Image: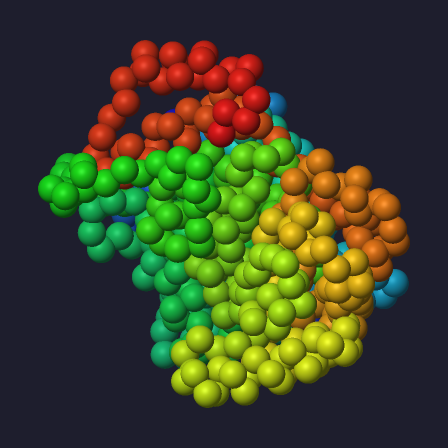
Length: 501
């Protein structure tokens, strides 16, 4: 398995309004050494100089890097003429620039930039397009510079575009409107200090992009700077200690059945650790939630709609590993039932309160819900969180169980009418059997059908590889192994069976 890394640290700038730096060269060399020592990466340094004393190649502290050199090196990493590596990592430390004329655009500053003459450096939009066209399956991008957050304005992070998808990790030092800064208590920047700590494995086993962002999330409260990140796809192995590892599992693990049968997987750690085969679909759902405020998940009965929303989408939001800050969002789940307005009001009741307090809170919520979308907007506005993810599971119950057409209409108006009133704070997620979409077309229903058409995701049957994961991987979690021939036989048996999931 080939693993290539391009590590860039630019200290020196010709443009008089950009100060020369000291941290980027140190930061880049420290990261390069960790990747070589613990990650089995073939590392290319830029700028590269020879350390005559130790006869080694190091990141140059005073050597300049031109735009042409930077572009050529990045193209060689992600889109070379030869066979692409399995894993490619790009690390950049240096100045970042933002061009605000016409449209806002971020750039990685090279030594020869001169904004007064129209030379801004390497465009992050160019980098985004290159990554989308790259055949490298595992892509890691780490940008430690001011305005680095610009790269995360990615319109397309769909890992299902090639085969079973690309695995991507973006980490940036600051949001697009913040300036990166150095940690005055360290020789390294704030982000790279955290990266060095996270990439140096303290025990056996791999450090992945997901465990790395766990560490960044834990540390960000200690600093005013907020690192931002976006992960998609399967975990990417970054570093580990190269010693023989022994796997010890509790003796009781083998008595656990890791399969749910006809029940859905819920958004708990206990369920999610056995949920496999839907990584690409989960990534699609996460991207829809990241960029919008409405998502409808449609599929046949038994296709796994509830499972992928709960154990896939919601569990990943709770972890906060794939979307920055999502671990602090509030998630509310309901099934419409016979009285959908009452079910909606119940989601705004704190189960940790006393019975009397819960009754009071429920009465207040019901009064507001009776006001329709205005009332729901008020409830969302006073909820102490950046975003509220409101999930209506088994949405078809609004047609099958609710017999009161006026209440059904009020329920739809309440949900859909609140979306434009709450901006990005409310995100509505529906799961519904696909055969009920026709019901949504029978009346206007506050634009329900149009929303589903524009923002719907279909749960398709698993591919053979995904189904294999769903069979094999849960067994591994309880220290069991399924014979390959048995897996083949199962796949053959269910190949054309409807609802095999």
